[in-house]
Length: 341
Figure (cartoon, rainbow, N blue to C red):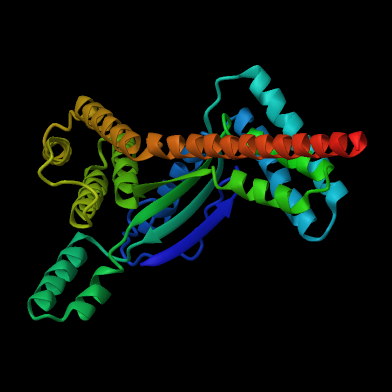
């Protein structure tokens, strides 16, 4: 298994050069390695589309708040205030255009894990691990199971626009009142309201979808090449099952497997496969859409947690204000008493 890591704000760049898969077929236009690269790149680009103009503006403002914290660390309070005021202005502009903004994506981090092998390799590894576990060789089994990973891990950070800007405004006031420690604490509290959500997309499913698309575009006379592509697609589906990403008993998986088998059978005959391909591609598109939707739902609990943090923070600030007001009242009463004397 090869592991690649990519991280950036807004832009997602996946480095593919070090992926080295052993399986390939020189008769195909693309090697297996190139197919993996293409599939992962396509998914990264799809994920990056969630970052619209609003996300980029908010991400830029968020970057300013991070920079302000660094400035405060080095005693550059004036620079920090300037950065925070720029961020505050940007947040206000965005909220003025759309007051109902909630969780906004501001960063994507992509990790790619590529498994070096086919479905048979995975099944053999699983059987070996089961045998080892039966004989209480758990650690050896663990070493076999850990590399069985073939996926894109996409972690998206969301900023709660109905919560985060309030912390910036408070931090600005604190800095203007020379309360640097308070401002730093407020900024850190604000950062803690960001919500992280991880989505796992099996590389094998992306591969299978692309291979089916490739096969459908081939000339009808290229029967052997189309069959090879579909065999590759079938192998990728099985990999997804053996690695636990897809339930082999699910109706959707069985239909996809059956559709591929029907097309391979038809290719050997009259090769009237256009409608079969269209049906298979539509089924796979729906399957992937539902898979992504199930994985990409941002937890409402996480958002409620962010809102709760803000409410607790506002309550704390109110209590501090009341306490200061009481102390001020006592001071005034003491001054009046001294004056009377």
